[in-house]
Image 1 (tube, rainbow, N blue to C red):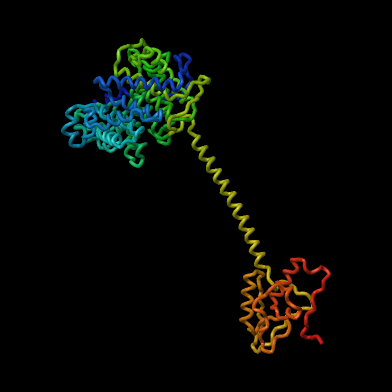
Image 2: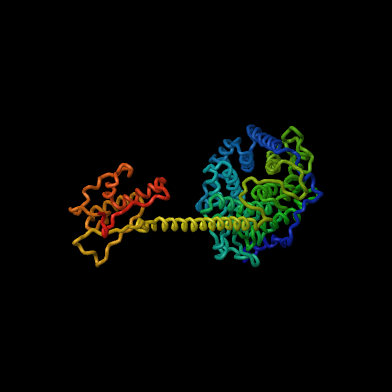
Length: 570
């Protein structure tokens, strides 16, 4: 019970303050220089020079944290180049570049129980390596960076309470029973401060770093739902149990919210609303961030790289113009102008810790890295142009998320697309139906035009050849012959083969056959009048049709005389 009370007491004073009912993102007129006048090219050159200064000092034995190498990697990503790829890759691929990274690489349940836990290592320090590696991986996509990030996440997962562990009240990393709830809030998602099995402290910054790392891995490997589940549990723990408007808590919370998909919910609240609430609470109620002039001061004038990076991530990843995005842009502009005006002497590329001034001529890798945060996150802001105080003229880095103030835009766009597709589908269906009807009419017309539909001129009879074969069922077979060349040829052949019922012109021969019909037919003008008696009916019809089409028969010309079997010529 004593440890239960300790654990609850450690976080009882960190309850989230009431959410701001309405967010006002009007840029205060008291903010110091909230517009950037330097061109983007000038800002890129200035940032690169600050990074190069650190690299030159490293050659003299100076040491820089992983955060500096991620800054170099992000510089390459923002400028679409690989200037610092070799040195960043070498850093993350080294097996012994840092003690904490080595622990992450060699982490296992056995190592945790018998090696890491007795050392009392800060969990947040181990999770940091995964976070840095993921930022570098986003630029270079090197597998070694992703592998380190995953191993670091495994460490954080081991020291973070899961939903199942919170329900059971026990976890392998700790030798005591867990408090299942703090007030009405679940303990799931809280990350312990250290690796010691007896340490009862749940640390806000460690929880925030694990929240961001989980969000980054969920984005990089969406098929592994463990990362998204962990991010949701950590985010909900921060909402329910931590004072997220404090400096580091707010920075990691804002960054994690910027990374997560807008469709994700935390504690039954939308990402849209949480982003606005987090920024509003941080920049208006956090005394470190709400100075009258807008310049961050966490103590002795010192700035905050984590706050700047969190807001920079929010600005880059949310590309739709909005009051919130403009607010973040203007706040980043204030920090940039403060750094270049009040922390350095022009041309030295050396920056001091106090963003309130005065400038420092003494180089420090910590101060330099702190200043690079402000330079780097302002480097991607758009070139200056004439705008109103509360308008947004920027564009984002990757466009992965839509902005908070436009939650219905996705639905509007989707509805427009669906409507357009439906209209196209209807038009296609109409065209299909019309074409089909036209095709059917054409087929009906083609199939209805037969020779037996043509009324022969008078006097005209079609006597049947005398046959000893009785008609089928007492009826004469009628043949409809389509007027096409192929059909006529087929019918001619059938007529010759079916001689007993063949329809003929004039008198049959004594043999009952038409041996005098030529095997081939030429133009009718080369035949004599007597020869026409030997031509089959269908051929005569075709020839007559051809002559009419060529205009060879005058309108006044009378049809030729035909023999009538009932009244033969004398």
